[in-house]
Length: 245
Image (cartoon, rainbow, N blue to C red; front, side):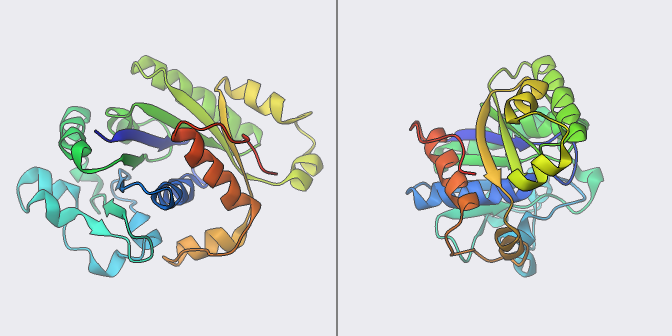
């Protein structure tokens, strides 16, 4: 049975979807078969990041409503063999209920080693649907006060929904920008502010973000991807360093 993960954030702009795609790709490189599910109804974007936007015909709502078979909504990523996508509906009105979505994800678990759900930002109804089937909730934040506050809100809602397994990913971290901002004494203060256990610190790298936004893979070496690879290893049960920064 595949392990189900959800990637969330308290506010938009943290790089949550980029983390989801990068993590999926890193797990594939470790020999796993990985399914990404875009749960951001009306604002889908993973199809662009995985380079399949032009080939989309059906989405998750079509399969649930019986407009197509489940296999018709699974799109292989052209640049990462073993990575697959189920796109979100284009219309927010097609959003699934937590129960229906959970049942659908459970039906897919035997086919994949990992299922990664990309949640919409914030803690609205779409968030409740996205986190419903998850065994591990990963909360993505930037090292700034508004993002830390968003993490507090996410943690509270996750606990309200009975989700206790959660981890913090600090994304787009720049040591120089962090010092220049001069809001926090150190990263420990950021982590304490969220109240969530840290699992990764991913450094800022615009080349990686640019490649993913173009629906391509970044092949160079950098600390950002090294941190994502370490994150994948930790999810896989290993114990590499938490951060490369």
